[in-house]
Image (cartoon, rainbow, N blue to C red; front, side):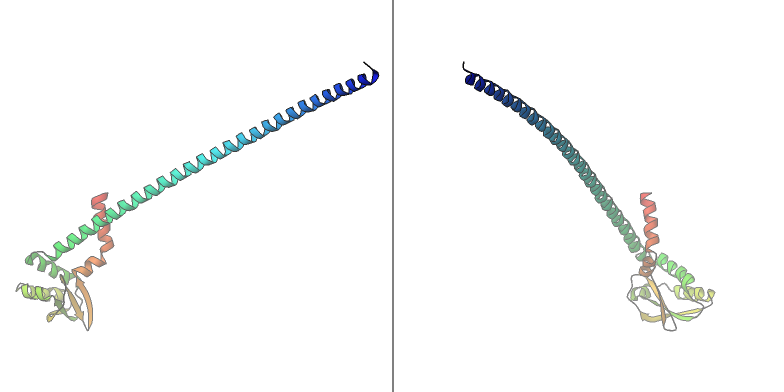
Length: 197
C-alpha cells in the first residue's frame, strides 16, 4: 500500500470513527429526547386523567346534589298539597256544621268580634232562613255583654259561613273564609306539626 493509500485509509477510518461517534451521540441524544418526551407525555396523561377524574367526581356530586334538591322540592310540594287539602277539608266541614253547632259558633264569634257600638250583623240568605228562633236574642245579649248593640240586618251577603259586622258604614269581615285566610300560616304550621313532626 502506498503512502497515499495509507493516508486515505487513515482518513476514512477517522471519518468512519467520527461518523460512528456522531451517530452514537445522535442516537443517545435522540433516546434522551424521546425519554424526556415520554416522561412529559406520561405527566400530561396523568394530569389529564386526574383532571378528568376530578371533573367526573364533581359532576357526580353536582348531579347527586341536584337530585337531592329535586327530591326535597318534590317532598315539600307534596307536604304543602297535603296541608292545603287538610285545611280545605276543615273549612268545608266548618261551613257544613249542623245548624245548632253552627249557630253556637256564630254566637261565640259575636262574643269575640262585637264592638261596644251600635251596629248591624249581616248573614247569607241561607243562614237567615235556617237561623233558630233563639239566636237573634243570643246575638243581642252577646253584643250587650261587649257594651254594644247589634241588630240583624235584612240585607244579605253571599258567603259560605260566618257574618259581616257593620258599624257606621265600616264593615268587619267575620266570614269563615276571612278567618281561615287570616290564620292561614298558623293553620299550616299546626297541621304540619300534627302530620310531619
